[in-house]
Image 1 (cartoon, one colour):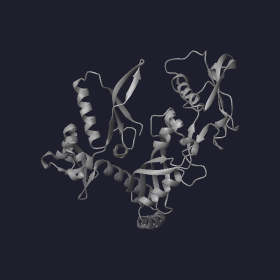
Image 2 (image 1 turned 120 degrees about the vertical axis):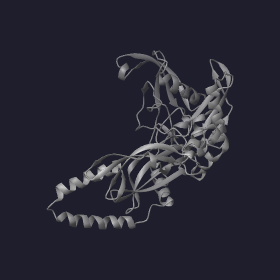
Image 3 (image 1 turned 30 degrees about the vertical axis):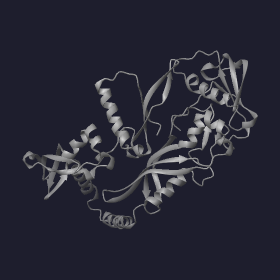
Image 4 (image 1 turned 180 degrees about the vertical axis):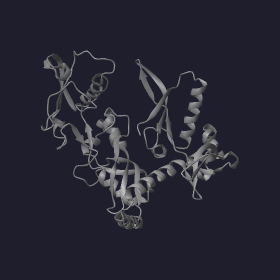
Length: 412
């Protein structure tokens, strides 16, 4: 949800870049992106930019894996074969192998996502029209015992059958096992599929609603965690105090995260009166800096904020109880070698609508962008899990959460 693309307004456009901007405008027109004209500073100068950002609708329409950085506009289906392009290319174990030329694509515009039916979208993205027209592919199929099978499935079935024939001959007890397995499978098939409401309850619980120790941890983190590193932590998690050291005479490279991320964030917190800074002349380094001494700025919380740390996590400010805003839930049922399976995948936001009163002070919200955006946007989460139809619970899967804005603390 923090995804965005920026373009300088005063840059001469090549034709390919102009085409890209027209495509982004089309995506913004149908609500998958938002378009704004903020300003940014570069080399001390203020520059106008055009920013395209992902909307909630756009996130719901995007792929579920990191490899699929795209908007899914429809699902292709089988549209038929071209008989004149089918030919016999071999035979094996009583099965005939054919090479078939088939057509796949979208049967009609009803197979398209509503936003992809927009004429401007189709003009900007001609691949949609190609799929509506249908595309041709060559596939291998097998004909055996009067039935057609795709090649991979036919070979797997044949290998399984050979293995079963070789290993299970003269073992009648396997017939009893198979019969019992069939009864168990029939029972599972008779169980109802998961409902959207069931999945929502599972996701609410797993993302902290009503839980004493919610996950993801509902906190605004202070520097000293992995994503906001410091040169040395001077307090431990077991104590309700906070102190970190930033070495002022340590050489730093251009990509040093302490210089690029942590120090600017600490400067914001100092201006707002959340942390205070004092300078010491000699602090021992650690890790790669062990055995060396540095001049350092020591940052600690001001008295007004010491008691606002979390009781369980002494390096962050609790945001309050979480609530869930569902963006997308997809439920699927499949049959693997006769065994029924169910699964679901989801996209949701974890929001913090009832923060501690001190977090809503206008001065803090205006000057502390991390806090303001955490309260406005929360966290984005997505994942995929299997569903046990007998226990009505989730299992064997995974998910992740990250701040749904351009955060100093990037992925959670």
